[in-house]
Image (cartoon, rainbow, N blue to C red):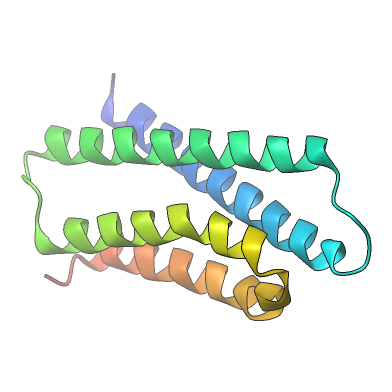
Length: 121
C-alpha cells in the first residue's frame, strides 16, 4: 500500500471513531429521557471497534513506512488511542457525563493531530 493511501485510511478511521463516540454520547444523552434502542447501541459498538482497528493498523503502517520506529509522540498517540477506546464504556455507563464529554472528544482529537503534525518529542 502507498503512503497516501495509508493516510486516507487512517483518516477514515479517525472519522469513524469520532462518529461512533459522538453517536455514543448522543445516545447516552438521549437515554436520560427515553430507553436506548439496541440497534443503535450495536451500530455504535461496531463502528467504534472498526475505527480503532483501522487507526491502529494504519498508524503503525505509517510509522513503518517512514522508518521512524516508535518515537515519544507516537507513544502519546497510542495512549490517546487507549483513552478513546475506553471512553465508549464511560459514555455507556455514565450518561450524566455526556455534556462534558461532548467537548472533550474533539479536544482529544486536536491533541492527537497536534502530536502527529508537530512531533514535539
